[in-house]
Length: 61
Image (spheres, one colour):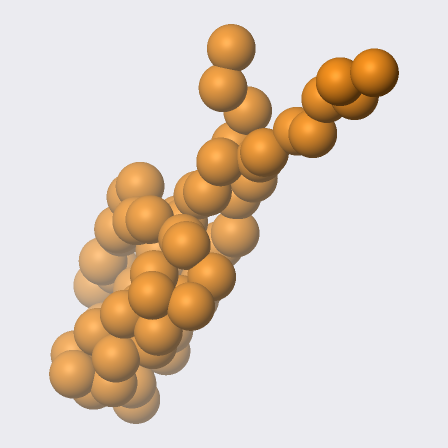
């Protein structure tokens, strides 16, 4: 079974689309997050759910 770690980012209406894309690209490249869900609100705000796999190290000896 694969376990995931989640992070929720919230962008206000003052954040442009290109700025939000840049932030999400940095999260994906540097910290290995992937976007699971994006929700747009009437006021122009955005909420993004990110996830990444939890890698568990098992003892070999």
